[in-house]
Length: 155
Image 1 (spheres, one colour):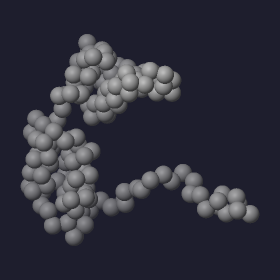
Image 2: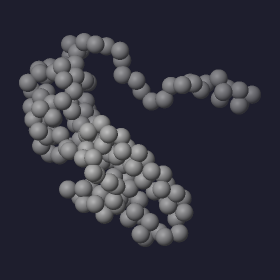
Image 3: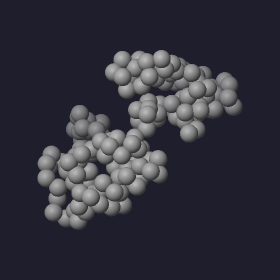
Image 4: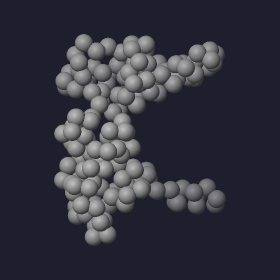
């Protein structure tokens, strides 16, 4: 009987929270378009990623959606002001993960699960690099090299 309750209480196909399907900025948001853009540029100058900027604006400034407030995405605002990084954000986060995993494997040489995870991660990075090179988002001659990536992450 206990297992049946668990089966019926599960929500199938719903993971995490979803944004409400509202296309209008709520009345309670006091920030105007210019102030939101200035905040985005200020946070971009602090070298924060667009995902982190969105979380900061939501949690600290009460701005639920930058696109509804300004008509532009955070990435568009950063690109217009030359604050967007030359590498795509998802690729940079994978680079950071790979560098951290390599450091972990440097001290824990027998961690076979981490080694397998690094192999999968580097495979994903290579596929993504190939895609971004094809799309023209990164240099076509860019190849994944752990030492070069370590320097990119340290910037």
